[in-house]
Length: 251
Image (tube, rainbow, N blue to C red; front, side, top):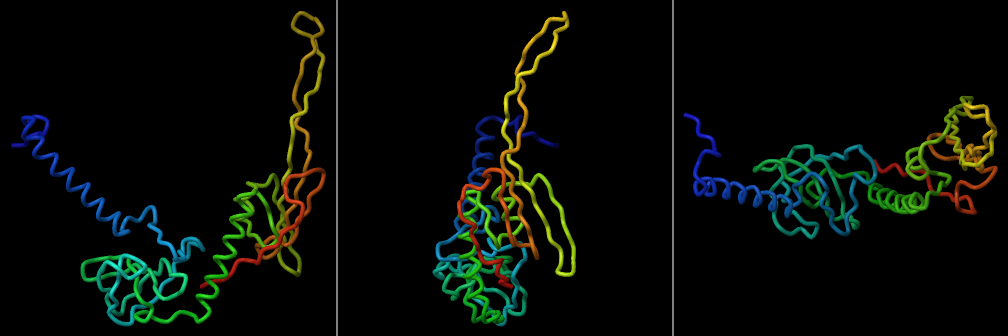
């Protein structure tokens, strides 16, 4: 016989439902407290997160059983990562002495901070390149916040800053492929027009016509801004052309 919850007396339903709700809330709180919730990422100060630098995962091998901790200060034991497995590095402390990795422990998958001594060594220039990439990101993010474009930015960064272009073209020669993006700024200009109404009477009305007042041309070479030209008015608010370093290859 199937008994529906709604058919039970209130006191019985209360005793069944409340413990279930309490259990769910307790589990959610535990997961959130230990950073196991996949979205949003729980961030800690003093860490550089791989997701800020691209979608490509960074993986390495666990050389020997590695104790992992929930916090960057190596506090709150999370479990021991099994040796011989491939793990994903999701963050690295700014001083490079702890890595946040996702991998398998005896109790299942964990996300915790470990010492790099338990992992296969990365490229010696990795940490240096990582810091350069983060410095570049801070500079570019500041430009994007002001809707600016600088030489050295990528097409994605330009689009995040000033939106989609009105026109895209490309040219290919012996030097490679040149991409050209054009932006046009318009204003609505009122114009008086005269015509006749259905009864033949002359009627004057106002219409608004879009008039271009600014044009910005951005050239991309090897997927970075190589030059830009602004004419017939102002689209960018900055007075000087700024330059940022091209994207840093971290891994």
